[in-house]
Image (tube, rainbow, N blue to C red; front, side):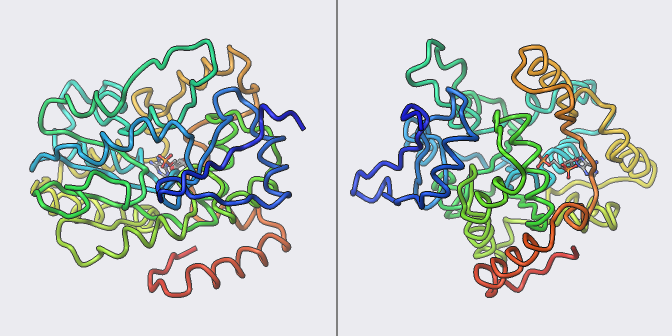
Length: 336
Ligand code: A3P
């Protein structure tokens, strides 16, 4: 095995970096399937899987000033983040606003984007500082993050401002399928689906483990400054979710606007919409041969229960056991 690609779990024993010996199977999967030069050094940071780059940003993130009119959409990856961002942005700004055509990353930037890619020991300079960029945004700020609750800015964690947090949940099985495809298209992952499932269940995917991420947010379920939405609920009754969200952020919506928004947020519209479908970046990655032609789309299937077609009986069993072991105390149920 080429040592260059071995994942390093760093022990700094001051509590910041937690040393965890990887079991040989996981180490083998990670080193053989996750071989991009930008993905070499990963750490377990405050209980979660990150690129070592997190250490360059964690302090600034923790100390960041929060504004009363901030709106944060916080999710585990693939929970329906983009869908929610578009809904929230349109509710807050109106759909007739010309800026709706701007890319969602400009209107609603990804806070910790810079922490994901490891530029150390490459010839590339770090291209952006997403944390600083978000700090400088004009108000009101719309911010997307996948950070676990315990790594959010402190002032957001202690709810000491009037900033609003919207957390979106999706059932872990569909999240797994969606994340696997995202890893292929976005993180240069070269392994099989079953290998990815193994990593997911062990929490060895960015922002994992899933159960700890979920529990971190659910611990604040009763706080009125945080709204919980479910992907499955958005599929079933988007209109109610829109009303609930509008109410939460202090906006109203007319029947006419509602009809328009429902259409704008439909899967088929979003799949065609270059401001949210990430087609351009996927095209670019295909041209650079980072991913193959058949590696698909960001707006992939957009359904509930995709796992039923994708998990074989062995994986279903593993999942069931994992869910019982790791999420038994959670009263939250997913409809699929
Ligand atoms: P699939 O990969 O299962 O299709 P995120 O934005 O958090 O990365 O989530 C992406 C997932 O949300 C993808 O799931 C995508 O298809 C789905 N999605 C995005 N917009 C949607 C919409 N309007 N309706 C249903 N699903 C949507």
